[in-house]
Length: 303
Image 1 (cartoon, rainbow, N blue to C red):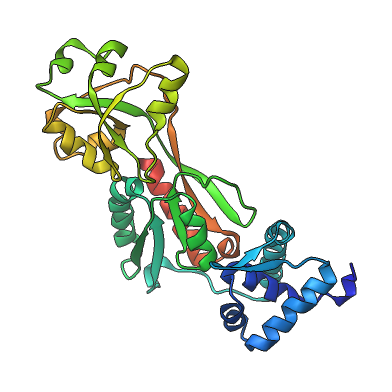
Image 2: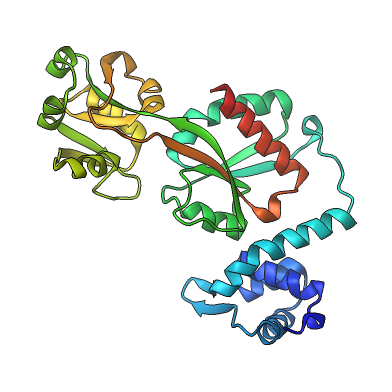
């Protein structure tokens, strides 16, 4: 590689292309014309000996080489920016801006109210806009596009060097039935569990959830009576039917019908679920977003 042919403008162009996946939007991001961005991409391809980005129906698709470079290049640019550009301190009480958060159902119900309460105390002029998502990999797409400042959800299926994360919340599963159900009196052993009709919570539309995956090695199957995309709807359904559901503990505890439900440990071993705070590397050193992430983490810790 001809290292002397690389300049910061080319690295900035690469970083913009990696984020935007579109030549026109990348050009606008760095303040150059579309032909100039196309020329920069051509130079990068020649210097690095790789096409870097391939056209697809969804936009520019980065090659494996581009994905490998994305993290180090973004980090290097942020370090240079930090060294050369003096950023004013972020003062929450004086700030007036809106953060956009990507949230799945769980953090929207469990964490968001407490977070807004903390924001109201510390930064009354700071607002929050929520972008909902259910597919865990959708969070990466939203962060890449700059649509959201941070996301809270189950970790993406594939780690990406440009996407940073920290564990935020952990929860365990419980099995719920309505209080008047016969199973509420006799207990929830495996025989009783498999005799009941179950609610499957599947935000991504999968017909096999955590329970089914745990039962499979035991050679056992459960009967599904209902499949729901929204976990917080399950307790209300169970409270009014003979169905049972295995949900996260905080989902049951936040239910309006909580007093109508009985909670049991599931008769099959299930791993806890961890929800991560996720953000893009390009925003890692931004003072306002650093403050927001710290506030989110502190709020989650109090839960």
